[in-house]
Length: 189
Image 1 (cartoon, helix red, strand yellow):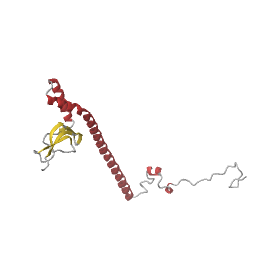
Image 2 (cartoon, one colour):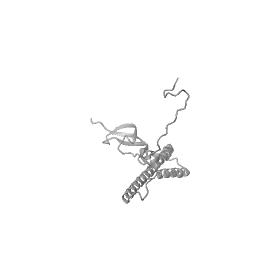
Image 3 (cartoon, helix red, strand yellow):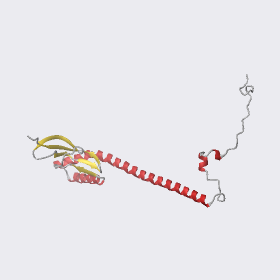
Image 4 (cartoon, rainbow, N blue to C red):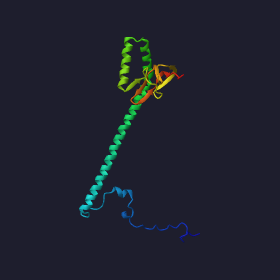
């Protein structure tokens, strides 16, 4: 049996010699884009040097702008991670703060416990924790959680009659809604 080229099987065919590599034939070759231009100053005129300088300057400005944007993005991401971490820690301390508030309402605080609770509240306030929820505030279902509702002729809109537990915010983030008893206006009769 013969090979399609006419040679007997097992015969080595000669390898064709290719033409030398011509970089102009492959303008998209990534290696060529990394190499500096092969022309020398004697082969280029002052206009071409000025164009190359403008091109390199534009490239440098673009890279600098990308780096500046990267730095800003990293700074924003770090702040966001910090805010999330602080919110998670403060959220875990809210039951302790609620217990301190209840003990304070009952008047069962000793001098040592007053100092500890004041330090806790001071440090949490320094982190940005703010409490809200006062009797007489208008009821807002986005920040208040109603435990019960009663009718009253003294109000013209739903109002927080009593605050069972204050709500807490950390910056603009709601950590815990205020638990309230709502007084609603009497039905017209």
